[in-house]
Each structure stands twice: as structure tokens, then as C-alpha cells.
Length: 388
Image (cartoon, rainbow, N blue to C red; front, side, top):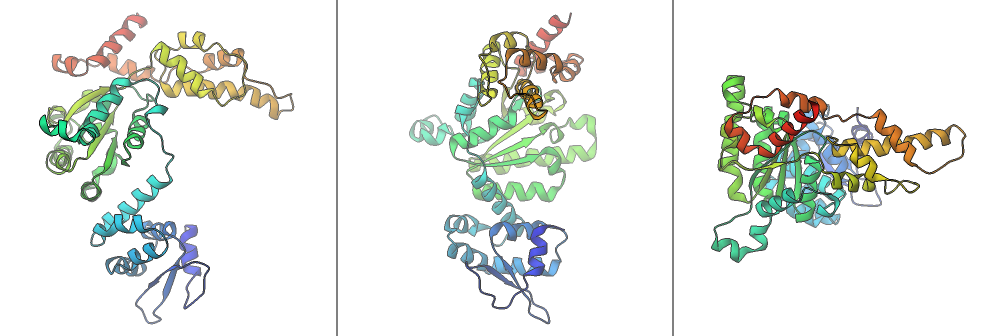
């Protein structure tokens, strides 16, 4: 049982004085119990905990509908959040989703495109789709361009698809909501998510493992077909008119239904491929920037790490730093990271993308797929030539 729920059970009060104003929720029963919540985190944790008795949840929901929670937020200095939640007071699923979204984004470390090395085309296309129509309003009206829509980020694992989407939200001061494709197998989650972002509007919805929603309907059968149809209706009817940007991400675009990928739905395809030589060098420098180190030859490591993903390069720096760390905790003199440490880490860590590349090599791409995903196909062909 969660710490928060234990606190709620222990803090059954009638008129207990506190240093700050708590939220009191009255439960209608023989005792007319009152429950106290010290802060918003405690309240949302209880609402979201399936082990909490329904009677208490019903009392909380009643307080939300009556506007008591909104009044409490205003009194405790959360006027921005109270205003943000106002439109959700009759939609309890949406209310909880909106609170969680607001809280997560408020606590999230704010990053923007200055934290992203490379992927300049991806940055430009994201800004064009999700920002520039609002930023250049008069020009955009003239050319009938609107913010919002859907973009698909595709490519090997570990190359920063989620990270880029998060930094885009920070770059444009939008809310960032992340969902896994499997979460939308629950129709209630899909409906609540779509309904909530329509009300919030200024949102980036990032759907990871998009292939789970966009599976080929001719291959996967009736259940998957219904699910794919539902997300297509959501994209067509509910999203674009609200200026919301959906960013889907997949490692296997070749399994997705062609109807999902047609123009007007996911009408931008951005390849998030392996970093180039120059990008690998900059990434290694970045990942090692906070470590105590001697002068390191990152160029030589970059030359040996073709087909290594961004996360692979980070792992090399982490594993290299672990060598002097282990020495130090075993009683040896603490020293700086050196070139030999990097070379040893490189020998230990192979690129994690090899299984993805081998799998992609076995895919027979149609002519249409070769055109649509040409950057990925070119990189797979390059790997085939290197492999021999």
C-alpha cells in the first residue's frame, strides 16, 4: 500500500489545525468522515490508486465537481493550475489526466534544441509543423498553413526519438504528453487522451511504438483493424483542427498500415538514423563533459563507432568512467579518465543496433517504401555492403 494512502487513513481529522491550508474531503457515511490532503501530489496519488475504496474516490470526485478542489488550489497559490483544470471539472478521467500532465511538465527538466546534437532536418520540420504557423501568423494565413498535424519519427533504437520530441516541447513551451502504443489498446485511455489534449490544445502528444497502433490491418486481423481505424479517425477528425502535434515513433515502419502513412495523416516522415562521424565526436565530448578526464582523442573513437547509436556512445563514456571509479572504491588513488579507459570500454561494448540492422536487411521493401523511407533504406544498404 502506498505511503500516501497510509497517510490518508492515518489523518482522519475533525478540525485539526495545520501550518498551511489542507484540502478537506468529507465522506458521506454514518460518521461523516473528513480526510485531509496536504498537497496536490497526495490527492492525485489517491485518485490514481486502484486500492483506495470507491467511497473515498466518490467523495473526492464530488469535491471536484462542486469546484471545491479548484477553490483550494487558488487559495494555496496554484491559480494557474486551477484555471487550467476548470474545463475538466465534469470529466473526471480528463481531470486526473490534466493534473498529472501539468504536474509532470512543471517538474520536468526543461530542455530545448540546444541540447540536441545533430538532426537539423528533424528540428526544422518539427518547428515548421508545430510552431511556425503560429509564430508567423500573417504569412501562414496567406499560404493556408496551420500548426499541428502528425509526424512520424522512425529509425533504429537508441537514436533519440523520445529525447527530440521532449526537447521540441521545451523549445516551443508546449505541454509534453507521452503514451505508449500499447496503452491505447484500452479504448478508454485513447478517448480520454484525445479529449484531454483537445481541451489543453498547446500539447505535443508523443506516441512511442507507433507500429502497435498502425499495424497492417490485412495482416493482424479484426481486433487490430478496429484499433487502427480508431486512431485514424482520431487523427483525421479530432487532432488537426486543434493545432495539436502528434509525434509518433517507431523502429519498424515497414510493418505499419499504408493507410496510416498516407498524406493527410502522418504526412511527414523523419529518419532518426545513426549519428555521423562529426556528430559522434560531439556526442562523445558531450557525454564525457562532466567527468574528470585527461586530454582525450574522441576523434579516434568516433572513427571506430560507425553504426553506434547515441545511447551506445553514452554507454561507452559511462563504462569508461566505471574503470577508474572501481579502482578508487577498491582503495587505489582516484585518477582521471584516460584514453585507455575509452578503448577498453569500446572493446567491451558492441553496437546494440546490430539486431535491428540484421532484421531490416531481411525486409523486402516495395518501391513505394523505398521512396518513402529512402534515408533508412540507404543506410541499410550501406550496412549490407560493410557486412559483405
